[in-house]
Amino acid sequence: MTDARPLLRVVRGHPDDAELAALTAVVAAAAASSAAASPGPARRTSWWGDRAAQLRAPLHPGEGAWRASALPR
Image (tube, rainbow, N blue to C red; front, side, top):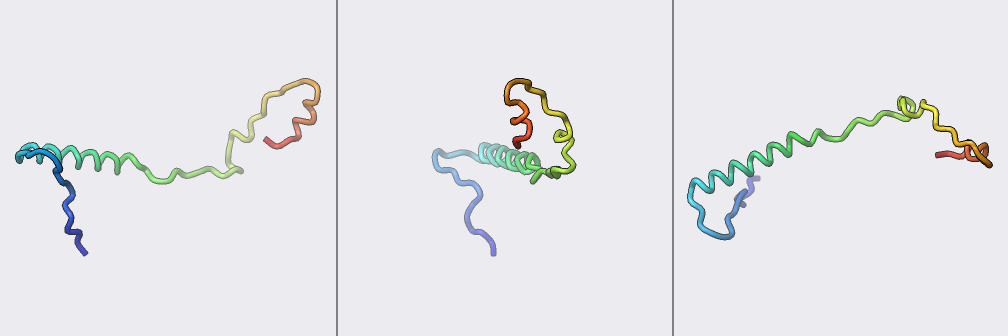
């Protein structure tokens, strides 16, 4: 099924052919750049493969620190 609606519509003014061609080129370039810029969903690393989880957390000595060390972050 084809769509009968126009892709662009001028709602104010009376542009000539050169102005319409320039507008079409700008809109087509913007659509092409936005389609190329969106790479899709990013691949997430699993929790098991996350290297940052293997790094040691900074030590915070003080009263009650041993209790806080066992609490989940």
